[in-house]
Length: 113
Length: 117
Image 1 (cartoon, each protein chain N blue to C red):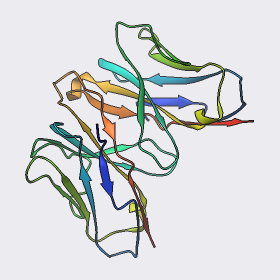
Image 2 (cartoon, rainbow over the protein chains, first blue to last red):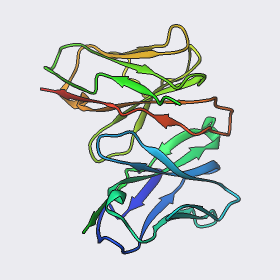
Image 3 (tube, helix red, strand yellow):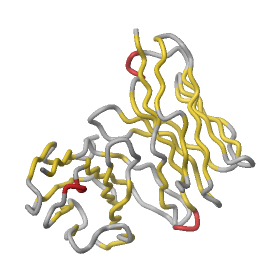
Image 4 (cartoon, one colour):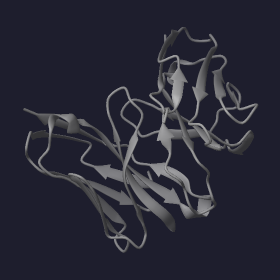
């Protein structure tokens, strides 16, 4: 069983709409949780990073939330743009393994005009 | 600043052939990572270097994969011989440092897409 599970696996939305991506994890204790955006044919790029004591972090139209009690995180995208079409990957840093990053499988987002 | 450079961007080989990938990290980054990303999955760490020493290679298939970072700067990843299941994108990433329990931001290169026929 993956230690970082993301849902949905894929999502199609219309341009201008909002959406929320989910991440459930079992990694414990963890140092931080990140959301990465990976465009097709490119390497992942960090969007947000939160420590276990933070509840929310924003980066422009991207807002990540973290509930350490339920071990859940979400990434909310506001007023989506065509350029938001990408894979969004949730990554948890495992403190017991010296900060080793545990990657989710990603959510494939497609924004249609 | 210049990002993480990788080459080649694409490679097609037949099974049982050998292949090598090259990575040049961001200047000054002590830590270098090689990941394997199979289509539809998140990246899987193959090996992590701290300068020219190996920190973690627990998921590297050592019977066919090898990697080196001789001068603590650029790195090569080799597969010999390749299998069909090695078809994937090989990502290189670097970070300034890694302190136990903390992780600096990793910056990823564009990746090398390997197809094994």
